[in-house]
Image (tube, rainbow, N blue to C red; front, top):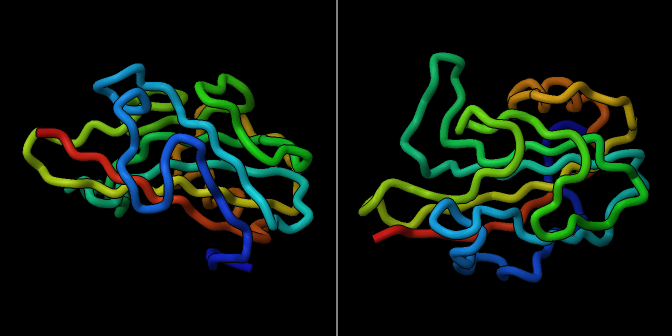
Length: 158
């Protein structure tokens, strides 16, 4: 399939599409992951979740851009959501240099950033080792990707 949007829908009880992410889910608050749920997913063997801020003014020598806040995978195909502050499944490495979730925290005065929470449905449930970066994960799962979509929230610091 490659990387193309599908009919799957990703939602959160914490914020609506295009609205502000509450402070408790940011680096200025409790820094916990929001609850997520997905519907209309293809029959998947596994899922992965990514949170990426493409508005961060960062380009690496690897050709990546923006800032990765969350990489989570090895989510079973029977799942249809994640609890708030989840500590389940396999954590990848975010751009804070840590494994797990790191909430929005754009530079002061940098304006409103968009945070893309992605759900990726996979045809294969091959267990992947912990600590993969977003790029490493995407390279490994691309041949098995059968559906994806995103929920976009915003956050701005003064």
